[in-house]
Image 1: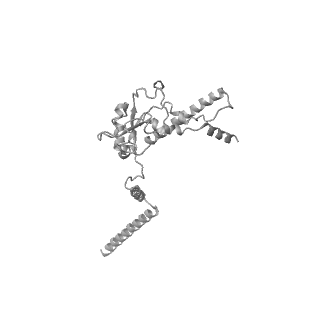
Image 2: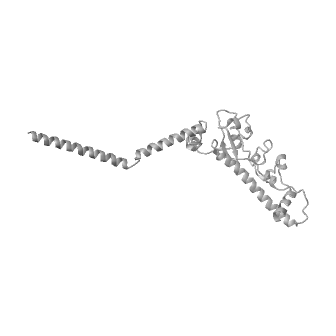
Image 3: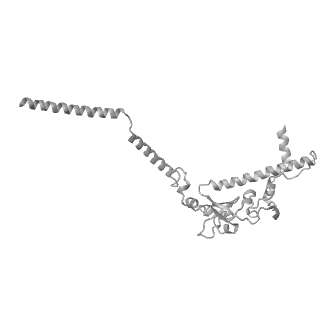
Length: 254
């Protein structure tokens, strides 16, 4: 009987040693594997939280994504997307000039309407650029004449990029003059298009502004049959001179 007990005790001890050995092997195997998936997740979460915290601090509490704000996180933009683009006549657009606090502030460039309500101090009543609100003032964006050219009429505005004839052209024929005039007018119109596209892109890509629709029914504005507007004084003063153009051409040929 005593011998049986000794055998059972020895078997129990041996079993315990085998269990401990297996546990130690499991631990060593786990340690040999290195960083686990859970450890990687913990590191990633820590890095993300740290990055968001730094962004919040650096951007003065404005963003946790380093200034990146997806359009679908901005309620006004999301609302405009869900309701679809709007179409306003010039008269209807004039109501959105900031004078009615219940309406957003809109302005238009090249027929595209943009919501600039996020900056009422600039585009609202009394703001530095409040005269742009409630209208399409594409011509003023080109000429810089904020009093005379608050209109979408671009007819003839390309003249501000065409040289003033301040010296006689005695070295070229009338045919050559005609060809030069056509070329310069074509290049001037391209310059107008680039200027308008630049301003339209400014509002379209701005992090606070967004497009909401288009201006419709412009009542003949921009139609040459209505006559051509004279260049404002500021735009006229910006026109290059023929003498300066000739001097540039002479230098480029040397």
